[in-house]
Image (cartoon, rainbow, N blue to C red; front, side, top):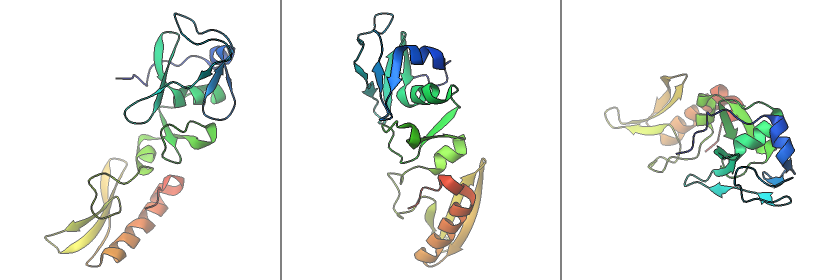
Length: 171
């Protein structure tokens, strides 16, 4: 398991060891310390986790690469970072943004077990109607109900656009 809430190396330390060229990866400026295998001039890409994120060892500790990229560019790493295009291995700085836990959750792909085709849209058998719902600040909020699936979906999408703002992920 990767600890992501551990103290990050400072921007100065990262800039001493790496150069960032905007492609989401680093190039080493000098040999990695503490038994690291990288040499100066090597690209530091890390390895992929099962979830698709890239992880990298630096100074004997494991870090998620997108967090190091953010730290390198901004000097502080928020608790949550969101990959705008939802590709967890795309660590270009323009694809990363600071987020809250809730905002990060808004920008996610379709759940694997989803049968409606839209996150938050489900069929209420008891009422024989489609209903839209979202979790917002720890509370479930209903965005409308309709016997017609498309009408319920449109109500849900309008609600999501209004409340999720730039983190609205679309269908």
